[in-house]
Length: 345
Picture 1 (cartoon, helix red, strand yellow):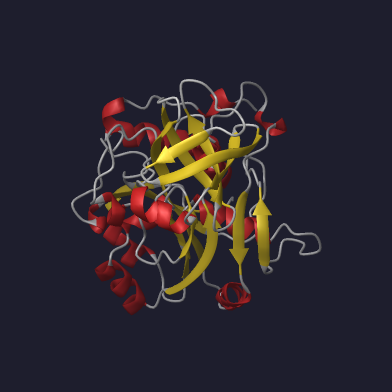
Picture 2 (cartoon, one colour):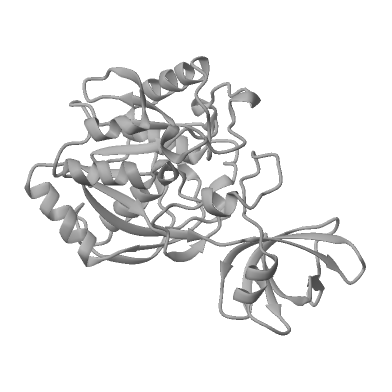
């Protein structure tokens, strides 16, 4: 299994550079349980979901994780926060003309950071005064993905965040959730659809390219996950009633399937809090998720492989080719797919 098996032609003009006029204005490509395909709107979820179905959202909140500063030598530096370690320390990637050495000082506005450690491509930076929260509040930028080729704007502060975001820690949005606005959520609730929440703090490694060669031997970046007792109980009641568990985004799939892969669970969902580096590839089983709402993903990416594992590689690549030709909007601010598991799946 090579990453080139998951390639497709993505024209630059299909990559959404801005969100739609309103959250629920997105298009929806539906892959149904009989193996069919239909062009729909995201608001059609109200008809596609049944009373008693459970939508599981990721309630992580995106940090203002991109910072711009200068080294003492005057060289410009971009700091991309990966994780807040404590009130005065962060783990981050650094873009600069030359990799900074230990003890390098970086000024960001009136804050001063010092490089205190390095592990691979991640640096530990320590504030000489003040707090990380104050630094991000004063100078942080919305960490738009690298394929959005513009500077962030004040509008992104709201649009690159889900309505239910509450646990700070992500440096990229769980983008399938960006399609939901209050009227759509209210319509789904009136339909009898239940809502549940997991937490996965999306890291910048979500954009990391896979290496050449067999993907089965490769590992993904680790991300922090929390699946609590309340969600597990809700999933249990949904299953007992014969209804579906619908993951809103690949981050939720990863969260729930990680919780079901703990030692001793034998594929049953159980509370889980910790790190996951789960890499779901074609051929892997799914223990919890019956349907997925997801955006369109980059060629050769681990996220596309997860979707292919759920729905079948050929079926997914055919759907992507259709979406390109039908001028769907791709990636973080783009349109969505709703994928139901087929009877064979």
